[in-house]
Image 1: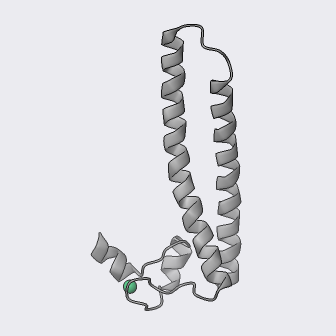
Image 2 (image 1 turned 60 degrees about the horizontal axis):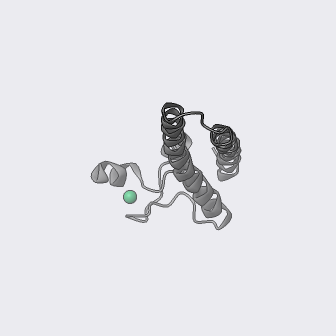
Length: 110
Ligand SMILES: [Zn+2]
């Protein structure tokens, strides 16, 4: 698989995640908008927000990684291990396009 194809894949995943974040943010706004009638309802709303914010953070990290990989492709730096500077195996990039470590270094870091 060429870097071109991997870039298209990364881009697709990135837009999927971006629309998911937009949906989550829409949900957050919806749960915050209605005025809580009593304390128990307010507590439920708060719990929901915490769950949504937890998901949001995970997705945000992945978006960051995907974006970094796309930038690396554009700059011609893609597919090089950050730790040992050797090329990352193509099979690994196909399985995990946002990988920044080769399989050996990833294993070493556990
Ligand atoms: Zn390495």
